[in-house]
Length: 579
Image (cartoon, rainbow, N blue to C red; front, side, top):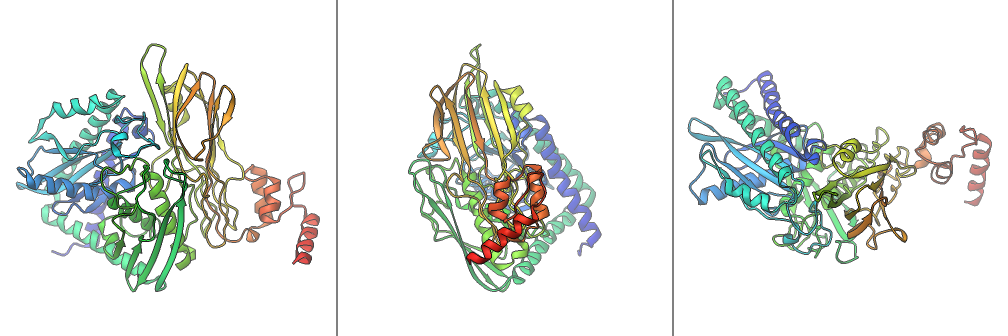
C-alpha cells in the first residue's frame, strides 16, 4: 500500500509520542536527580531484525538513541544463540563496547509482539547514580581499565518470559554504593517500557501491522533522501579539522581528534584515521559511540532531516581499529562524554569550511563531571554526582546560548535547590562567567561559575573535565572562548589540578569549597564586525568587561557605559598608522 502524507504525519506524531511518554514516565519516577532532574536518559523504537533506530523521543539524550541501535542488535544476536525471543522478555546490560557508552548508562530492551512475532523493540537508557568501581559516581579519571570504573553487565535477561529475576537485581544492588537509587531508577525504566508496549499495541490495533511497518520504512527512506540532498548541496572535495583533548588523566599529553570530511556527490565520508591511538586513560570510546556522536553532530547541522537511521545511510565511516575512537574491552571509557563532544566540535569545524552559513562555533566542550562523596554524621553514605553547563557556540544568526547543557543531549543542568536538598553542600556561587564567550561578529555564549561549600565534616572530591588547555574554537574568523578552570580549597589555601581538568582523591573539610569556572562557546565571524552599540550592551549586562571590549572588539566604552566615540576614533587612527 502507498501511505498518504497526512496519515504518515499522524503516525509519525503518534510514534514520537510513545517515546516521549516513556521519557516522561522515567523522569517522573526515577530516584536519581541525574535522571529525574537532568533527564540523562532516553527512549526509542527499534527495528525488529536489524535494531536500527526507527523513532526517538524528543526529551532525552540523542547520543543514547544512536548508540542504542547497536545495543538492540547485540540483544538480537545474543537471543539467537539462546532460546530466542519471547513475550515478556526484558534484557538489561551496560556493556560500553557492545552498544553502550560507559558503565553508568544502563539499558533495558523489550520486544513488542504482534501476531506471535517480534514487531519492533523498545529501549530505555538511564544514567544510574553509582555502579561500583573505584570512584563514587563512576567518572574515574585515573582508570586504566574498565574494571576500575564499575561493574560490567553483558546482555542478560531481567525478565525471562515474564518472570522477574531477583538474582540479577541482587547482583546489581550489591555492586552499588546507592542501591536504593539503583532500585528506583530500574523500576522507572521497567514502567516506561511497559507503558511503551501498551501504547504500541494500541497503535497496531488501530492501524494494523502493515500500515505501521510502511510508516517506519517511509520515514527512514525520507530521512535518507533528505540527507542525500543536503550532502549534495555541499561543495565537493575534502576538508580537514583537528582538535585536542587535554590529556587522558594518566599521561599529561594532548590527544588529537582529526577529521577528513569528503563530499562525493550525495555521499559523505567521515575519515578519523589521523586521530590518536587508544590511550591508557578513560577518554577512549567504542566504534558505535563514535558513529552515534557523528549522528548527533549531523542532526545539529541538518536539523530538518527526520531523526532515524536514514540519516546515516549516505555516510561512510573510516575509523582505525587501534584508535581511541574504536576501542574494545578492557580499555577504560568512563569519560566518553568528553571525547564525543570533541567529535562534534570537529564536525562543526569541517562544516564551517563547506557551508559557513550553516556552521556553529564549538560549544564549551566538557560536562565537568564532578563528584563529592562522604558519610553523614549518622553514618549514612552520600554521593553527589553532577555535570555542569557552559556557553554554546555562536552561529550565523546570532550569539551563542549562555549557560546551556552539552550539545550531545537535550538534558538539563540539575537545579542547585535539588542538589542542596539532596546533599550536604551549599552553592555560594551560581553565576554567569564574564568574558568567557569567544569574541566574534556573533559572540559565543557565556560559561558559568559554580562554587560549592561542604557542610559535612569531610568529603572526597573527583573531577573529570576537559578544555583546560585547548579552548572551544570559533568559526569563520571567530575567536576561541575562555579555558575551563577548576580550583579546590584546603587548609593551606586554593589549589588547581596538575593536569588542568582531571583529578582524584581531593580531600576537603567542612567549610571548604570547590569552584568550577566553565568555558563559554566560540565566536562566529570577525569581532570587528560587531556593532559598537551591541558591544556596549554586552558591557552593560556584565557579559564582557570594558578592557575586553577594547582588546577584543576595538570598542572603547566610557565610564557612563556609552560608546566613547572620540576615543574610538583616536584608537582607529593610531592602529591605521601603525599598519
